[in-house]
Length: 379
Ligand code: MRU
Image 1 (cartoon, protein in one colour):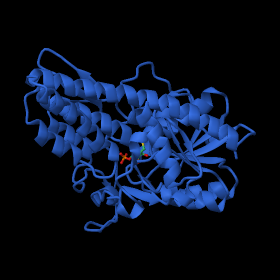
Image 2: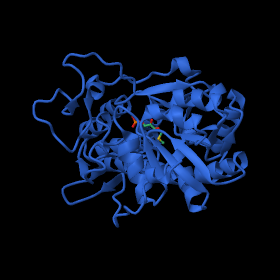
Image 3: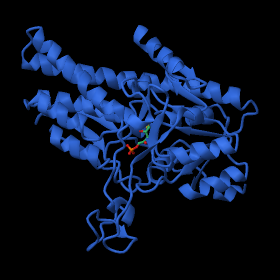
Image 4: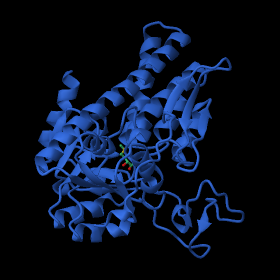
């Protein structure tokens, strides 16, 4: 396919603001987020001084993506503790800010448990807050380490499945350093392939309605100097039909005990297309995204989001006077109802492999998944 559709990849600005960081200015500790609703137009930081501000940042997707939601949730508990708010109340509000990504509640409960354990041992409120913060920092570090190991395992799997090299990879939503303490999940694998000189093209689905692919993945790919091309979600079928996709790489928000994968809406149709065209469909996610307590896909709570995200085009950097509630540009008659699930569920039989930091699971079975998760608990 003609390369004039490819971005040349020379938009590498020198500074990189991390997606999340803890700071302790004289006025008191804060959690600083790179506001993802403003990318790629502006790199703007959002400073949270309390848990309600973080809950709002999570709901508005200023901070997003399963692994980073876990890290953010843990820091949110630490923030409430350090600033003397009710920790349990903050933890409940944070854990329920979005329902689908299992990492959010996991991160929150981990910091909350560290806080509780410190109090139970006779520590004072300052020591308990320090314990919550240490737990958040530890989770942040672990996520970065997991990301590096997923990239290694993922690249090895790609090389095994596609021995010719020159991988043309299709990805959906956003799974890079904006969602992780490290370089991400699926995107980290593509990046490893790029660094090894084996990525021919990253096909980036725009990811309607909130355009995480166009706004965020393209931003990350450009900064990494990758050869990438953006497509509308509904162009994916013709791309497969043209034989231009060697593998699909996506992340996950929750993987159930039977290996069903909840991920950004539009992932399931890609899995169906991949199966029809005999293309590997690979899910990359840390073990923390596997939820043994959710038995199967039908048991996953899929977040339903506001209709205005569909009836308006998001243009966060361009406030439009007189627009509907979302502040975007209306593209449907006023009052139009919209169907707007944030995620869909891909059944395990359509997933070629699940790559975790503990190795790849293929074929995807409940037993193999449980075994890989047990490996991480053994360390
Ligand atoms: O609604 P979002 O933007 O938080 O959805 C994010 C995704 O669906 C990602 O693909 C998923 O969290 C995996 S990120 C490593």
